[in-house]
Length: 454
Image (cartoon, rainbow, N blue to C red; front, top):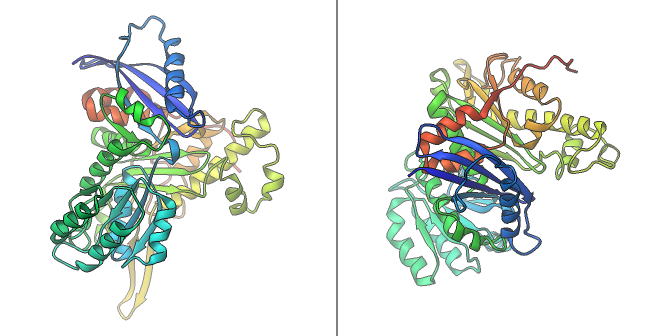
């Protein structure tokens, strides 16, 4: 089927609608973009969606779009996909569950390891998550912890669906438990089936299915679902799908997005053979980290405190959208530090221990040494003056060689100039060939900055 597709990105503050034509052909094209404020406060997100579509219509001069093209969507409105994660051992099933949830685009609000306590259940009830992930036990290993936690959740006031991805031997018992309680249950393959083995992709796919079926938190979102012919995905999950598409097409990649509240970093890489045998914790092919304390507006105070600046003095009259040269300079400086700190947290590093046999070297965390491309997306890293210097700083930040990160000067810097990575990610699930062509055309090489660094 050929034709036109609209992809809506419904954010917490802004709704963007991107138009793509030529679907089902060898010549797909990006036709334009409409923007409007998200209308959660007005009681119906359709108002903002309609406003963005109307804004788009005025920019499609000379383009013959069908009056009612197919629509896909991503959303981070009403807090996006809020999840809690519960497993057996923190560095095993809990960490595996977190990897699956984060890669699917979730915002994780609470995690527990071991048997949940009354105060844990009370906290989950207060959070009111959209989805709960319950793991625990390798296949044919420990069973009781996950069963006890399932029973506690069934007896709680929490109404969110539960996704069980633990020991396969518990499937029948968990099904009966949730059916008796009248609760919605999804069952996926074990996210940690054997020691040191992650199995995150089946869980991520089921998280997207649950999100699409139950995303009714933002007012009017249930009506938006009626307009959407294909997928509705969490926006960060759609960015991850686009990163995975890029990886299949061109190689190992990182994507960085510095926002007003968080800094998100995605990477798709298997790591290097050099460090594989000394890895202390297994890593997924596709990984996302969310730094909730690193944002250039909502969390600007946190950044100032990290940098030793006086927040009251530094942020005086600092707006959400910069308007003066001083505002732009401050936003750029905050974005530079947010991106650098976030990337250092995302990357692993070498660790040394000393014993009777001498010094031993271990690889702790994410091995990014094989990554060849760094893509900037989001408003800060595609709009702010001085963004080239920010990206060059990321490219060259491993000068001392302590991080599991590419050597200085080796990363190729690319920019999502039209801010369409998330749209291409959800589009790739319906039109993978066309999305790959559009992705190649969407990314622009970042020209090197000639400004002086401090």
